[in-house]
Length: 203
Image (cartoon, rainbow, N blue to C red; front, side, top):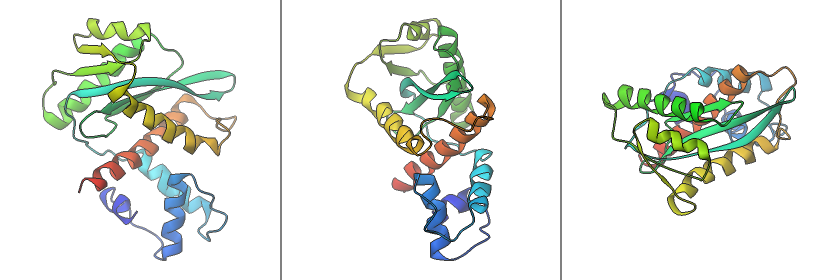
């Protein structure tokens, strides 16, 4: 947990083991009732992480998938996740209100921006995905892709299971005044933590 704070240049305003455990508990979706750390302090660090940028290693081989996760003000939102098949990190995600070919093109563009920032070049990417017709637009984007039902594509399904487990304590919805922007901020923090933990495991 201290590693997460250090790499994001977040100076803790607390020092006890119980307080650090409380912050870790929120990341993992645990109840904070048994901890003495104010909820506002935990949320402060959560918001700070939403603007942190962690450059993750990318290999050009990705699994991509989307899932319906959120209903806010009667609007259904979909979470798209790209997971690197070799490094295990999430180089890109996005939240949309539809599952269209244009969304797929936006996703590829987002991954390419990450590749340029991290590697200095656009890689000859290869995507594996499910049978959603929108993924045919990957051919328009000029990238190799393959429809795979099981196998390596399960690695992105594992991410969705983790996300939905975290959301289960929220009854699969956010507060009534949430917006697409606030949802993206929340997921940005979540995947920052996810990637840092992935990188920590390989250190």
